[in-house]
Length: 261
Image (cartoon, rainbow, N blue to C red; front, side):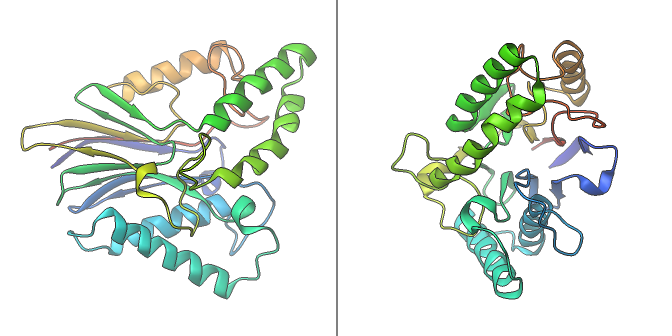
């Protein structure tokens, strides 16, 4: 395994606010995206998204090489149990608690696991797991912005529904079901698995801060810059649940890792 290039950058100029994490060891390579916090709750100066990404990073850093996805998710559930045991969390846990998504490569199994809406690319082929409710709400936000000419109003309109849509987290019975690491059991069918043979492969792992994942970091950055210049509110060329907030440099935190095996 050879790491070719990597980058993490927050949407804010304050790097301490970035809710993305990366793991690069000889056992696992991963991109972890803490879900944007839905409240002003902080613990030890960290938002729920940053806490969640940190929990997953700790699990992967400590995991044995032969740990499978079930072992990793069990380790995450223990982290969440410890958190809720130690902290008096003032909000409803399923919708407002620490949440993260991740894309994980296991060197032992030569396998990539996609949990939630991170991204992967293998030999040029893209793999994503878009959240259906976010796609619907992104389009509605775009409609509101086109009508009102007010990006802030678009986000205000969809915010309650983003929270309500969390009822579908880790629900494989619903067409709106999606995987998220939040302390719950994740149905195996919601975790996308990409198994690789013994041949040489080029792999890219990334968070969804890159609207279009490209084979190189430079190309991915260029495409992001092009989209943000043409559509900073992310409501025309690339519809998202959020655009560039005042004072920020992008619509979301972003992380990119390229490796060969």
